[in-house]
Structure formats: structure tokens, C-alpha cells
Image 1: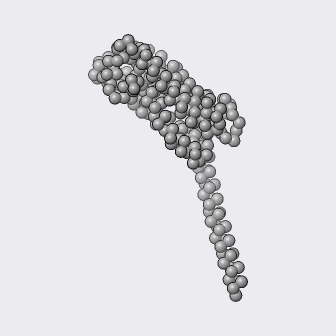
Image 2: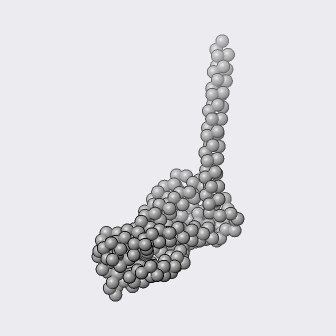
Image 3: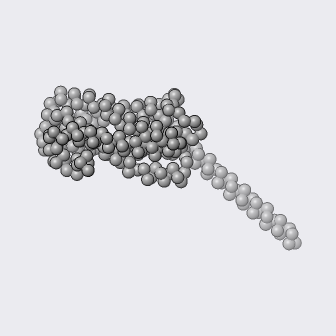
Amino acid sequence: MEVFKVFQDKEAFFNQTDNKQSGKLIFKQILVICLFGLLYGIVMGSYHSFLQAIVSGLKVMILFITTLIICFPSFYIIQQVLGSKMSFRQMALIILSGFLLASAITLSFIPIIIFFLVTGNNYHFLQLLHVAVFIFAGIFGMKLIIDALKYACEKKNIYPKTGVTIFKVWIIILAFVGIQLSWNLRPFLGDRNEDFKLFRKYEGNFYTAIVYSFEQLLSKQEEEGSRDINYDLDTDKNEKTDSLEFMFLTE
């Protein structure tokens, strides 16, 4: 597809950003990002209910686009101050390409998510799994943008070297904005033990929630382990009782 060209041929992609069709390409990238986010969110929310699936799909789509809208203006202005010769469309296409790759990677994890939905229903494990998927996808998406900016700097000479360093700082800002926005949009997964909620009003923050999920996951594993040990002890006890009764009857 045309929107994936930056993944395969940077030269052709940069040549395309200069023509009049770049506006259509930006629209196509945004459309694909929304579609991929919607599909992943639907699978994500299907853990709870059909309604949660639809709402989560819309939330993931909003998360991608809103994070981009909030953070892109500051990045573009700073790059222009640093002396970048890239046009608004060129820079928008590069940033959108990173988000496109991130959304495509999350989409590729859908079969794995469905597998764990079918074979297990551990809410806290699924929470951590989704966080890991977004982190993994984000790393590769940002790497794509960095590679594209380096190409613009070294091959095209239209981007300053300091801009690449500034972008790495911008990634941190982008991550914090995304985390805060996702926290405000929660729940995405939805606890089966609770009724459907459009937004959750629990106190705390994203980081304490992750720690809590780890603690709950570990405590549940310990409970299951102790339950297995007790079961084995009861089984041994019953077997010994049965053998004693059998010996008594045969004497």
C-alpha cells in the first residue's frame, strides 16, 4: 500500500512528500491509524462486553490521534527554530508514519490477545499484556521516525543534526502525554466483576496501577500454588487413609 512506502523505500517516500498528492497521503495515513486503533480496541474491550468493545475501539483511536494533535505543534515549531528545511507536510508524513507502524504492530498482536482471552481470564495479566504491546509498538514506531529524520539529515540535507537529539527528548514528552491521556480515558479493558463504565474515577495514577497489577498477578499465582500444595497433601492423606482401611479389612 502507498501509506507503507516509508517502511520499504525512503527515497521514493521523500520524493512523494514533495508532490501535490502528499495531502491525500496524510489523510490515508490518519484513516489507517484510526482503523487499526479501532480494531485493536474492539478486541481489547471484548474481554468485558460488546459495549465495552465498541467504546474501547473508539478510545484507542482517540488516544492515537489526540496524542499526535497535542504533541505535533511543539515539535514542528522547535524544528523550524533549529533551522529545519522540511515542510509541514513532510514532517507530518514522517510522524504519522511512526504512528502508523505502531498501530500496525498493535494490530498484529490481535491473535495473541485473542488466545489469552480464550484460554484465560486473568484481568491483571491482560492489563500488563496490553501495556507491553503498546510499549513494544511505540519503540518501533519512534525508531522509524528517528531513521527517517536521520535520512533527511544525511542524505537530503534538509534536517539539522541537533533536531534528531531534540526529537529523542520529544519522545519522552510524547510518552508522558500518551500515558496521561490513556489514564484519563480508562477503562479500556473493563473488569468483568464491575458494570460497564464509560470513564473510571479511581484515584491514583498509571504507574501505581501497573505496580498493583503486578502485585495482584503474583499474589494470585501464590494462592494457586498453595492451593495445589494443599490439594496434594489432602490427596496423600486420603490415599493413606484408604490403604489403612484396606489393610484393616484384609486382616
